[in-house]
Image (cartoon, rainbow, N blue to C red):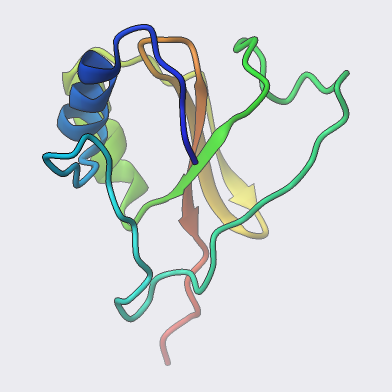
Length: 118
């Protein structure tokens, strides 16, 4: 995922400081699925141009990040005064919440459903 930004340095800092993105000196992040318990793949989907799923963002894309602990991340977002647009606990795929970054891109935060432990 590559994002055009009005202020790239400020946006990278926000993703680092607010979402905990492991940014590097070159201005981006390499996100690898090399730890046990993480989703095996990133998701991709195309939506109809008329879809309201990305609202209130007017961007032509939305980012989805898999997170380990949605409650902890939402507490960190609240401490940084980032409003949560919506959250859901009842999806068959796990728990979700939605926020906007400082440039208005909608972000979907997803904590995958974990297999029950015996």
